[in-house]
Image (cartoon, rainbow, N blue to C red; front, side):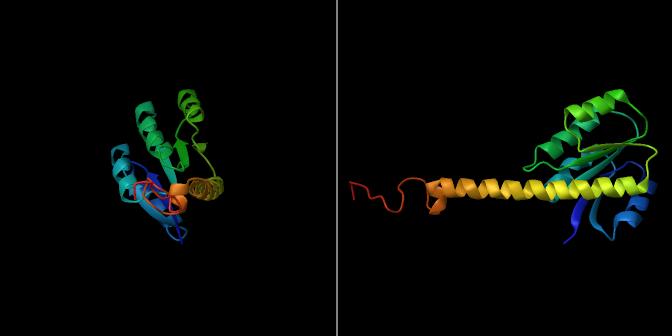
Length: 159
């Protein structure tokens, strides 16, 4: 089973390079703009999002963060920025972006960050499933798989 990687990049050339680099390892989805991210999340939820910001724009970054953090469990966001922007880095740290790469970077560093993000996402999914299982066991309505109302062993005095 392949991990799903969503790549947000406005440059077609960079999207093609990413396709050649990552296609054997991950199931890839691409979008050219932040506006298409909502649709991609509705169609199929990625395990990790890789967002290359060419022009620092807090509003676009906020939209991507909202999409990734609103999922349960959250989707790790790896951010690539072209310049050392203190404003973007601060914003990324406040809103818990998984990792922020600053250009230029080593391709091996990108591989390591993505692998760590996929491992982190798997761990979050496991924790989320364990929490759901605990809720099912502690909630008698879910435990017996009955509709809300009377539990199976309870009888109404009006029957």
